[in-house]
Length: 146
Image 1 (tube, one colour):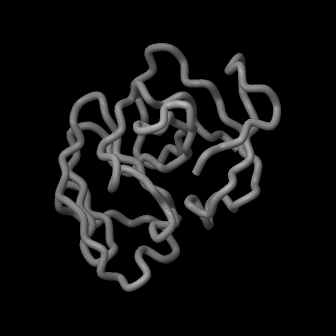
Image 2 (tube, rainbow, N blue to C red):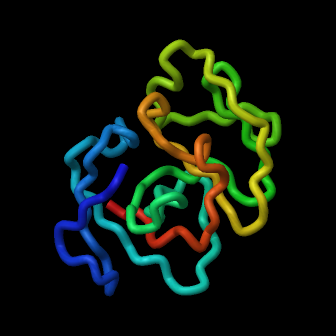
């Protein structure tokens, strides 16, 4: 989901972006405005569940927003559309409908040091770490606060 900046894009302080796609629904609706706080220099403590804004690994000029579902050292796997971390089922109340047919499988993949694994809450409509792999923390530019 490429974000469009609505109130300046020089990254001095918080910024407001409009979300153009359904990839984070139902948490963030298409067309919604989000407040994004700039990522402080040297910050590396992304927590599981944080919604982050990052540069697309394949198109660094594009910004995307997704949820961090696994952090460094964790092994992520999807079985029948359900998320498992280190082999244990992980409850995701923000995911209303995992996969269209419930048969989605992915992994297992161990998240390397200095990386996170990001996914959209709308799993059927999200380009995320399932396609581009674990995301380097250096690609994260901020996090959604509102």
